[in-house]
Amino acid sequence: MNKVTKKILTLLMAVTLVVGMFTTTYANETKKINVTFAIERFTIGQGFLVEPVTVQVNEGAAAKDVLEEVAKEKNLTINLSSYGYYIDSISYADTGVINIPESIQKMPSIDVDYGYGNQHYDAPTNTSTNALFTDDQKLGSGSYSSLAGWMYTVNNVAPDVAMDSQPVKDGDVIRLQFSVYAGGADLGFVSYYENIESAKLPNKDALTKLVANTPDNPQVVAKAEAIKVLANYDATQEDVDAAYTNLEKVQVTTAEPTTTQKTTLKKASIKSLKNVKGKKVKIKINKVTGAKGYQIKYATNKKFKNCKYKNTKKTTYTLTKLKKKSKCYVKVRAYKKSGNQKVYGKWSSPKSVKIKK
Image (cartoon, rainbow, N blue to C red):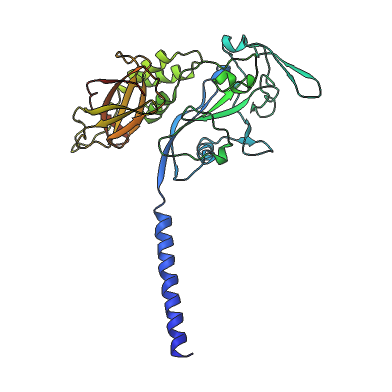
């Protein structure tokens, strides 16, 4: 072997070693994200199959990865359809005792012409039966009505793709929900039937996330009450907001601070509030020392009735999808981590801005 050949081989070995080290380092540094997840059976009065939990997955994961992580942890059997990553049923998910909300029972009948004859469907009642129950107590497509099945939302929006094609990001709220009638119209999803109006349901995402982030503690009655409100199909947005307010009051007291760690944060303040084009509001927050992020509370009335919440790790945030000619009221507060729990500072004084553009 001549000197030139030896040099080339030595160089190749060095490159291989460096690439191998880089690959190993990169693999070990895969970023993790936290996602809130729950499985709900509210339309048949059976509450949660899986109460809200925080799931950690790799950055770049899909909704199916979150589901599979939970299924593994909770020992669930998920039965998929034969035409893609759609949930056909979940084994042992039906208790056999139903209490379908009256508003669903009173939904109109549906007639559909599939080209081979008219099909008639009636809304389910508490005397309806689950044809899948004798097969491992499955709950899924066709349970209690021919138009029933599992559906899901990400941040209170129903994706138009299967769970294996839906990417998730840090902070997302994924809710797998059982629809007992009208293909999701009973869950507030877009109705595909002319005579069926989508149910007007409250946004439960913020409360779902807060429940997931609140440690179990028999003394914290607010968490148990919040779970009851979430599971109540007929709960109003006022009920949900009140449960959120009650539960967030106990966040500091349920934290587990160390003796050397300060758990107090300075009261936050809003630096500026500006309406920008596109019915948006840009918020600038004065930085709070020690804060890991900020929670934003906003509403269209100064009493913050039917308010909404947003979290950000930055001192700027833009609210979107606001109503033109309305007035947007905003409060902010800082938060930090203490043990496994968030600790919040006091709410800022409110500020408001008119949505003109």
